[in-house]
Length: 327
Image (cartoon, helix red, strand yellow):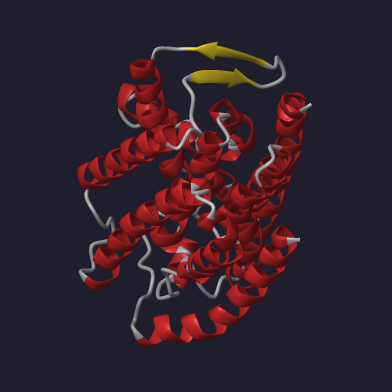
């Protein structure tokens, strides 16, 4: 019952909050600047308010704490650990957005600054998750229903790289109206269902709050977007995605549910590598790959629909791959 209340309540609160937040962002002149190397037709989006991720971040905090309060009194903190990781990444994103908006530096924080902050957050989260008893050094393999124990040093390096990579992959996906929210919504449905069958209604509250929150956010972020989530929202979502995967001790499932994030990231890596090796030639028209399709004539709505649809299918496949674990 708490999960349903959280989804509905988060949707309504996000939808209402949007009606207040967007005018506030306009008044603060928190408009998005458009990168010079991006598609030229995106120039019309300049000035659209950013940092709209606050719209679903605040309701998620409220419902995780309020609905999950009885569990907190009993010493169940796993949901707070995942929420905390997402909030730290959201704060990093907020600092990045602040630099872009107020200091007019389009790229925000430097790559090194973001990397160090993100690695530190990942290490602290993994240590706390291990201390709380949620994390093992066993790597669960979906479909085969087997686990492999690996040395803790190797696991921590692997986990840290996965978290940082996942967070930045979600950030790359946030390039056209509604895309990051649309792709992440079914991922949060997957984690809500998985946490419930895993036996933790409390852990399910966090992804459930984002199911409602992202649905409410899309009322304003779907094309044509009235607000962007900014790095504040995309890094928060990245932390939520990888945080849930590790809290449930199934990090390899990210390969399936996060397939769009992976494709977006790999497209950039391929483009940069090929460009350098061939002294200026390109594989794609533009990366991340959603821009490739955009420049090929796909509308933002079509890209949103196809990429979200692929994620829905992959989340269903991921559930088939792990459901035997709860049998």
